Image (cartoon, rainbow, N blue to C red):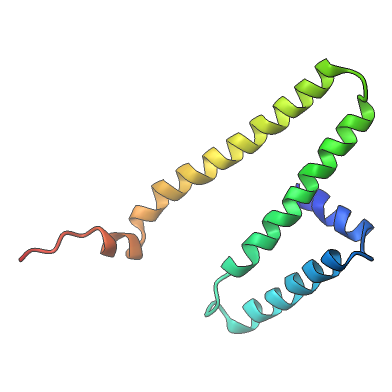
Length: 115
């Protein structure tokens, strides 16, 4: 979906938000690359999600153009897309809650210190 979102923003390059996302992506990548790990990649995540969301919207638009009057195909397409998004979110949440307790920061937060 991120690649489809990149296509959408490349196709609409004259829009101000397309140029803004491109500038944020390039400058953020340069700053993160120069800092050699001192600056985390986290500030770029909301923009990556916005681009992926544009890709999801593009896929829905294309699906409805292919099946403009077929409610069964429209429902099946929306259901499959919703299922994929739900599975991705479930995987990411479960991997976060499995991996986070094993990190140094997670252990320091939940270690019981004696009196």
